[in-house]
Amino acid sequence: MNKLYKNLNWLAWVKIFLVILYVFNLLSIVIPYIEAGLFDPMGLDFLAFWSAGKIAITDGFPYIYNLDRLAEVQYLAVSNPQVPFSQFHPVPSPLFPIFILPFALISHLNAPSSFTVWTILSTLLLIGYLAYFLKQTNPHGKQIHWFLILLISGTYAVVLNIYWGQVEVFLLIFAGEFTLAFIRRKPLLAGMWLAGMLLKPQILVLIIPWLLLARQWKVLWGFGGMAAVILGGSLLLSGVDGFTEVFRLWFQYVPGIYSNAPQTMINWRMPGIRLNEATSSNLGWFITGAGMLLTLLLTRKLIPSKPEKTSPEEMILHLTGVLAASLIFTWHSHMHMVMVLIPLLVYAWQQSSLPQTTIVLWMLLPAVLRVAVILFNIVLQISNLPTIEGLDGFVHGISGLLINVYLILKVLKYQNPIQTEAAPV
Image (cartoon, rainbow, N blue to C red; front, side, top):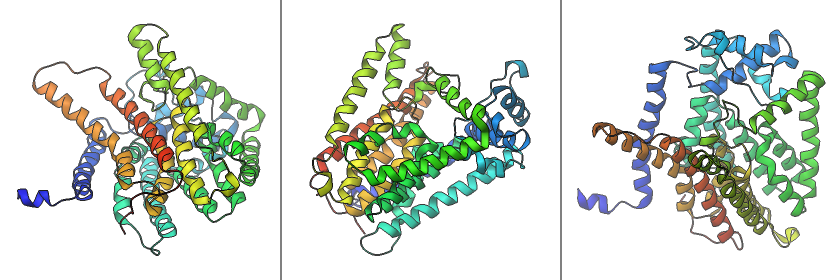
């Protein structure tokens, strides 16, 4: 038996861990559902989207950000509210009106049924798109690398996307289509797909400046044109008053409303807030500021010196680092948002532009640390020792921050020239 284990390579150990991880992920979704049902807190983000869609149908798009109407709709949707209506705080949707349209289409179903439909459809869409993207980018022929699909589907980001009922599968698709158009030398189309990331516009905070400095003019023209369609369509749907409400909501997100959870974010804001809370001071903002400055300096190094002579394949590797930098630089960034990086990392795997170990570590480290924290808390409980308050949230956030800093450094190492170990077929 010992000899058998000694003959296993690192990839075999990853596959064994994935089996354990899938069981763990399933339990982490099923147990909370059995104990508390939906929307407490499982599916809470979906509830925000669904209620906005329902209000869009019943009242009109100008009212989808109205907190009073959201409270009325969401309170009725929650099966067992823990507080009276007067103390109930609704969860608002910060999406542009045009992105609420899919939820308006399924809002005729009740909230639990809609969540079930959404979960099934988004999961199938994720697996189907990954299979398509792998076939399109496989240099050895149109084959599907099923190990990568299993690896990606088991990541903590994907589990959180399912748990909260989030929309990151669309971010993943937009990033994937952007990548395909870019490597096929269709910059206008690439820019149009990039505009889809206005679904979570904070992701673009470093991407757009980088594209300007890298002189990717056609990509920016495509982005600008499609952005005008998205914003114009949103304005037509909600009117001026409704459209401006989304910006007011964003400014509420910056100081941190109750549903924001900045203590569990994966950006430099998170350690700053935690240090401020621990010291009852503003010392944490020095950590935040230093981290953001460091990220800007690293992003500057990701700008190719001669963009016109840089191949699309190399540019995508640069953009992988820039996108990771955006996720830790921006003011609002949660673990499920890292799904936007998955197509670029799949492409890096297919092209052998980053080591496989780098990609696997990026995908699995948050899940490994999550399992470790849960086991640690179980040991503390068995030993009748007090658990460490906030440890799980801190590890959740810091793991997302670390994997993206790690990815940026790896991209800087391998960006020029692209030379790494070969990926297996």
